[in-house]
Length: 76
Image (cartoon, rainbow, N blue to C red):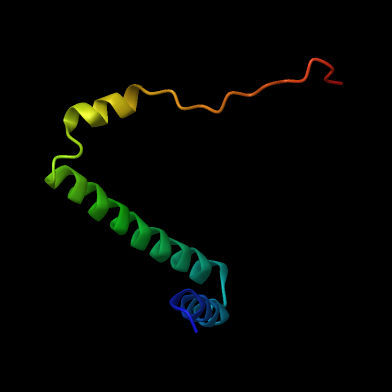
């Protein structure tokens, strides 16, 4: 069994114990917090090794990375 499959089973077991909307929200917040911490550690590592700096972050803030939508000329 792969680690991914084991993780899925653990999640299902945890979800099976949720009995209320409040518990569901708490679980969702715990998972979100876990992944936010992982992202922050990754960003900190990039900062520490010089891959990003304050200028990089300022550039990111000024970027407009919207998906260009193309509308068909024969829209109804």
